[in-house]
Amino acid sequence: MPELKHSLARLYLDETKFNRETIYSRQRPHILPAEPFKRYPKAEKVLLPRKWDGEENNFWSILQQRRSLRKYSPKSWSITDLALLLWACQGVTAQAGQFYLRTAPSAGALYPIETYVAVNRIRDTEPGILHFDIKGFQLERLTSKNPAQAVSDAALGQDFLSRAQIVFIWSAVLRRNMAKYGHRGLRYIFLDAGHICQNLCLAAQALGGGACPVAAFYDDEMNNLLGIDGKEETVIYMAAAGLKP
Ligand SMILES: Cc1cc2nc3c(=O)[nH]c(=O)nc-3n(C[C@H](O)[C@H](O)[C@H](O)COP(=O)(O)O)c2cc1C
Image 1 (spheres, rainbow, N blue to C red):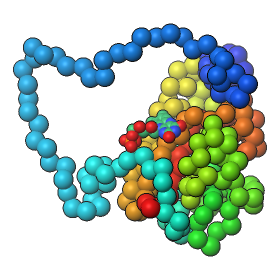
Image 2 (image 1 turned 90 degrees about the vertical axis):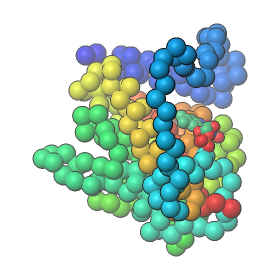
Image 3 (image 1 turned 30 degrees about the vertical axis):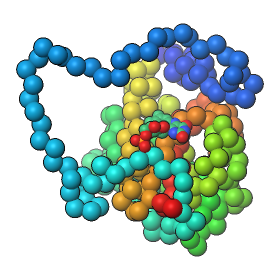
Image 4 (image 1 turned 180 degrees about the horizontal axis):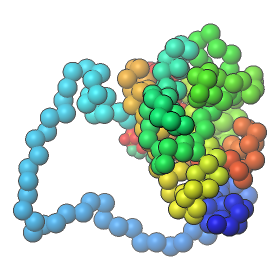
């Protein structure tokens, strides 16, 4: 296993960074598109009953109604709502030996993802950037300045992020996963983050709001906002969230 800085993961992450200087000039590989659906026309068909219309706010209706939400109510979630959203992302649900098992699965129970929140409007909570201490189930304040505009600027200027009540920012601590899985570990890191984000989307829907995943951001700018080095730990995913207008 090469050291982290010579790993395929580091190379891939560095080569695919967005930054202001190169974002529009960098050549993308020319890859022809594919058909959006695959079918086997000659295969025997097994018809499926459509049974997911359920009671309001049950699991099936939450799945049916989830949409990426980019417009938000001026009302705010409370700190209790924020706690539920964080618990949905990565809350500890059981302990098995040394492992603190969570709401979202993780390859090898290694949990390489860290959650930060950029708080714009949460009732009775000062804005700022905070880190989620998963084991202590508490937030650790890193800054007290309203981060909304800086987060939106770093997310390629997507301005709905500045109006979201809260933006979740997920980083990967690469070594946590790659010490076991080597190069292949990068796959698992992204898959883990996807599970966490989907939990957030469904929880936000259940709380009368929604979330919008965001993967378009200037990597170094987001890392700088969190004060992380972008090498051992780097931002890989985000989601804006808020109540529905
Ligand atoms: C990996 C990923 C990255 C995304 N990045 C962005 C983004 O940067 N900005 C944005 O507005 N939406 C983003 N989206 C949301 C998609 O546009 C959205 O999921 C898609 O259009 C389907 O719509 P739905 O989520 O409402 O079903 C992203 C979604 C995923 C899964």
